[in-house]
Image (spheres, rainbow, N blue to C red):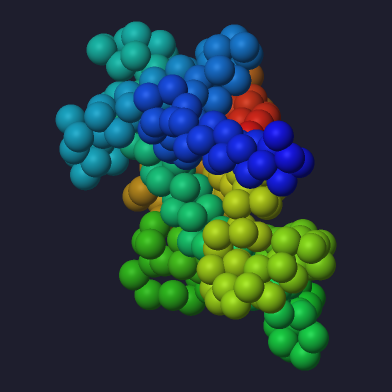
Amino acid sequence: MSDKTKAVKSGETTEAKSSVPVGDGKQPKSATVGIQVLFREFIKDPVAMGAAIILLSIILGVFIGAFFIDQKQLMSIDVLSRYLGYGEEGHIFGTDEGGRDVFGQLIIGTRNSLFIGFSITIITSIIGIVYGLISGYFGGITDVIMMRIVDFFMILPTTMIIIVLVVIIPKYNALSFVLIMSCFNWVGKARLMRSRVLTEAALDYVAASKTLGTSDLKIMFDGVLPNISSLIIVNLTLSFAGNVGIETGLSYLGFGLPPNVPSLGTLIGYATTADLIENKHWVWLPAALLILVIMLCINYIGQAMQRVADARQRIG
């Protein structure tokens, strides 16, 4: 048999093998693979699994429990019930200076703090990721102009501006707080994403995609964005915890939510005197412990999600 005949038969054999379906002929979907990797990483890390269960229980508990609490009635003043201790007159965590139930405020306040933190994180992340992706991908004069805008926002005294806006805005509410915070908190994400996208845009696969005629939009969102998913997930997790902390801190200082809207910050803000800190700790201690638990849970979940993103990138 001639070499040419052998080559032809070899090619036919190879083509036949390549046409044989693997398994049942159906390739696993990317979402299915992602879920499998997610479960595997959490099962291997019992701390992250426990943190996810605890955080999910807290979220479900406060959002469901808030439906059964009348906030207007909860925040009404009852001077005769002021500073009741744990379990007195049916108040699980006692009452505050105005005779308002601390447990009810804890549920409503946790819901408000989590909602605000989540809303700010989503809004700022969308703006920051898209802004940084465009700036880093196109580079050149586009990158220069967009980064100068970021530099302008970063040199502003953000905290002072937020405090001024909180004071002067009429009918200030939780939505106003979210919008104010979102106006300034996206710049850090934009700069972080831009620096990573600059590295990705210089890789060979981007140049090859451009040569093949792939649109810039498709390269950015189907090529570059998935490759920086690990950084995005970690940043989202830390941002969520940070935004909850910012709301808590500003509310503690009196520049967060209005006084009639409970939050973890307003509850912790009751700890202003030595008598309250030492002798009436039921007013502020549950909120302080709860925010500590939430921050730890988010941190452990974020570490597990980073491993998931890294594993998904290795799988492709």
